[in-house]
Image (cartoon, rainbow, N blue to C red; front, top):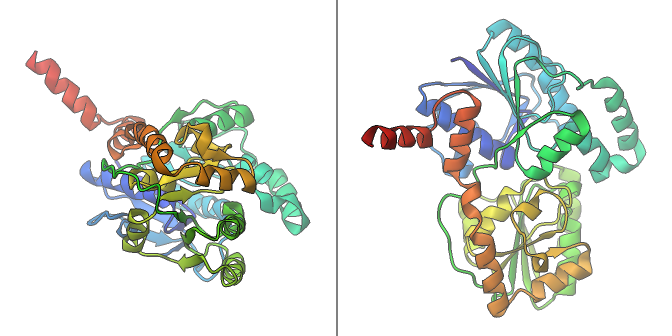
Length: 373
């Protein structure tokens, strides 16, 4: 089975985490996929996620590395250029991680793993609300035709929130396959430490400036903001504001070791993107013992079901953080941790194996039980 994988950028973010785990699944099946992209942070796509020895060919479609990230136009450019490669290589399977099937040709079997629908991003992402970005969104809506996907297409969504969006906007059915966010380990909480960590690419959609405002209202707490500078200008603005906030530190491009260190010594994890499709970092932080505090919108609500840990504005965020210390914080964290199994690596691998039409480890186990009886 020849497999081609499409993703505009490969880096320290959730889509690449899923992609790396999918490559590991293919390797276990004896397959070495070709990954096509415009740019990558590290040619070893598994390093940032603790996955070693992955086998694949990484191919850049254009000399694009120096261009700042512009996700929506980039996925279209990637698909357009990948179209020619698909027609030339004729793979059996294409794993599309670009949130749109625009420009992809008829021919191979497709698995479209949608993290946030393309049309929804133009509607909800804050940058498209005004100025040149609003005009850009209008142009993209005219340019991109997504009504009819390639015939042999299977759709998977990273959350129920995203699945519902796909059905609403495209009248397409999708299967929910949660990302491989949990590695099977759980740590007890430390809700009295008053240390908050955040993790996410520095971009207006992630709203790190709101996190700084929260930190300024809680001078007796310590905040650490971790992430890659996906939008360099915005990252510099966050750094300037952070320099005027004594109880807050910004760490760009943190290593896996630094992320784990911050999770292990923090009491809380704060997430601020109101339109997050899922939120892998929320799962990782909660498993590491951090009480998660998240917006009362988007896919993160499937991870954090307790209303006490959700917020609609800065005031409610401060209230949720202060109200989840002590025994209340321990109880709320245990409630979140009880749901971790849904987001485990084994579940992701089994679901993806079925999506590409091969027996999963769970299927083999059941066959063994049936044979024994």
